Image (cartoon, rainbow over the protein chains, first blue to last red):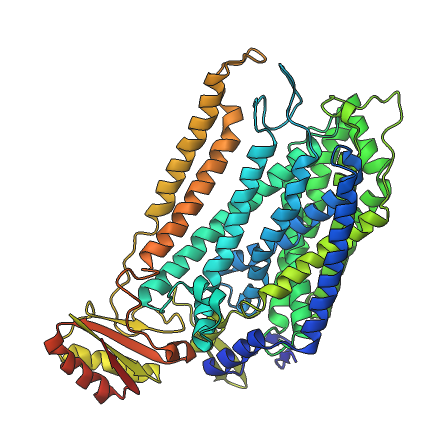
Length: 467
Length: 167
């Protein structure tokens, strides 16, 4: 329950557990699983298997016809935009020394491990896009200029690999002390033993851990920008005639910030509601995360508008074709859904104080945003993959002919969408068997450095920030 | 050289033991504190941790940058194809690949740096350790000539160590 002072202000609540109790509680959550966990694991695993079946059926049709893979691409990029960006919160709010982050960082960090799965989903997409080189001496316009070999496949995959490595390293470095706890609690936990690499907890190791978090977090941040430059450039801009938009990768990155925050809020809600972590995850992180979330909602409009107005003003055939195709004609329903669910509705809802200052309010808004982002990815990637091969590389759509038609999902697409999303949940659940869903070492540090003191008729929280 | 580990069930008794080690003539270069929580630096009077981790990403980034430069420049020179009147060795197409190389190099070297600088794993063996540390106990590990170990053991016992190990 929220602890409100006499003037209605929210007073942060103390955890009420000792460090030993935190360790015992979190270790028990990792080594034993309840019925809710098993149900979620079986259900997500079954749906993931369904997705694999859908993928295999679709793969039998080959990769040459890109249009049948549009929904696969949209789902993969949606996961990159949401789950793939969630670890950034764990890094960013560490850098700002926000104490409220401590119960929620692990929920974000585990998504870092899930990025490996996202990368596996990305690999088939490289078989679907054409080479930059279209002839002995001819090239289609891409960000790789006239690279004669490896473009875009090799170079784009190399950049994405950097991002995935950074995410995995960030996950690893933040969990090393907790691996050591699990290693010591049960010698048979071989994965924890390997990942703890003989961690002892010396002062030097703690110091290195802090610096390592900063470095890997920085690389993750850089990698996230790289990913959200390469993916939209190679899998969207380079495929649609006339789409040469310098703002679009920045818009894509902004949606990743928005999606990452929304994913984290929903994850926290699930952990609190069904994961039995309500003692740890209270209202504070929900409330705090809505502040950057509302900013991203309004920035969504700003970035979209900046790109739109240049195209609207430009009025060349290329610009008119792109606007008609991805926004105002062919994929208009998806564009409008994205506009409403990523910007207008969440923006209006989050202005209301009672919505922000609650647990359910930010969760519902985050769900709205996640749905909106999915529609937005459909209108970008299904549209891009729907451009016929003979038009890729042209400088404009031929406006004397009809634009490519809108592609709606078939049963195989639905199987792949559900399967890919369930796969991410399945991997996430598996990782919680490896590390606890709450960062033990950070929570124990919080207990060590937090004191509640009386002041006149109320109390105040004194938090030590030694670094 | 010999090693001794004193295990304490409270941070206060561990801090008290470090004072007694000071009094017995040991310096904080001879002992280190093992904890399951990052205590504020200097809380036990331990030495200031020194590391050179920041050098690793710089070295990796430089190597990665030049690898990217070599690949792109080498490709352009090996396949001299004049396009759009631009020079053979044109900089803009090289930027992204050099950036990727820089990031990958920095990442790999940082990982190596963390392992080396944390002494993970220790080359000289696992070292004295007790699994109760991750349950909240605090350990002091002291490396000193064998003849001085008994003085350290006395300091640990006097401060209320719950267990003592030697190797």
